[in-house]
Length: 290
Image (cartoon, rainbow, N blue to C red; front, side, top):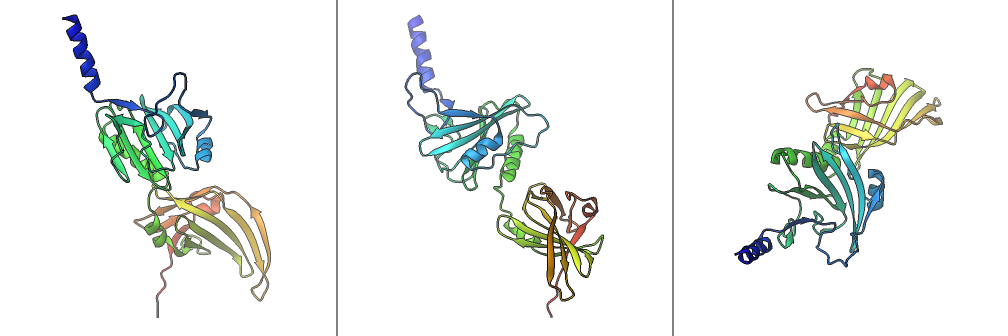
């Protein structure tokens, strides 16, 4: 009787749905004592630099158990950021490959093995979402606990937006043009659509012969902001013929942002380094063709 019961348990274990999370996209036969080629790093920036990606942290106040790895696979590298939210562990990965990098097996195949393009799979034992944006990103958890499908999808969507996978081309095209500050009525701004970012130039006239100028490039985020990290402020003077006679870099304070109010169609420079600029409320100039 005991032998029969033991044999039955073995059969059940063999035919039970297999589930495992591995380092690379395929199961690998490893020699005894040969670990997965995972190298631990000390920061998110380091693994992003190592793999040429833009993994980001979720917008949560409390993150625990943060770890950073680069995994050498055959033909590509995986950047992996691990973190825990409310006792739920997550893995956020990137690799420049079309192979499934989830590392999650459901039976003999990985969960996205038969899928092409963006996809999300959610069960009681794992939840995973992947998308493509100059490479493949994948957010997954194999211990979903109490996290609902809606909560996981919301988190994945926000990570997707922050990682730059959202197509902002329509937004950039809409914002392109000349803008006038309705507060000071002395400041103008020009936005130029460059496809993946916006070129921004701001002019503030001191007199007919001098003005301050800020130049920067900005990218859109899902919270309605245009963020930049390369702003340069210059002070320009001209002669009576309108020719520039001096162009002096006044100050470099590179980081900041604009906030777009879709209802009022106003761009506010709330992230400016100077208090006077924080009051700027830009409205797009509509030109009428005659």
